Length: 122
Image 1 (cartoon, one colour):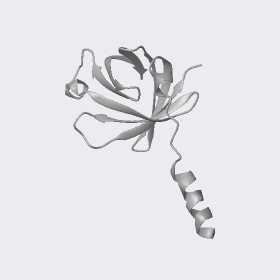
Image 2: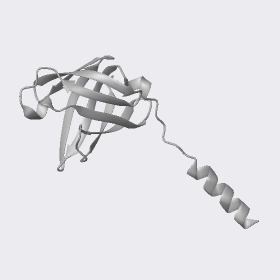
Image 3: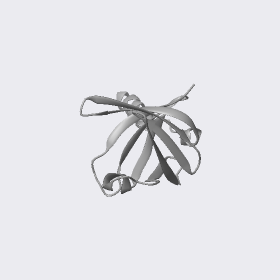
Image 4: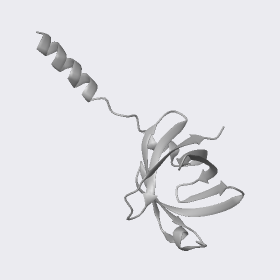
């Protein structure tokens, strides 16, 4: 009988899935926080279905967006100024809340991924 309870308990908790309401974050105004080498980087951005305009350290970058699915998008920098900006970025939303999402991103073709959190601007 104990085995039955244990099996039921494990079955219920193994079926838990992170919440991902990615459609809520495809458009809007946001700010994000990413920690790289123990340094916190913050940026603000506005996103439509096909364009994202981001402000960071007084600089503005624009990217074309191509959504793979509701939770994954490819960023292509418009008017890149150097070789690094010519590389496309793949972003995947991992989890969502009502006002934020956790994401991971990397340059296309690279295996090293960074994680961050984006918040809906009030």
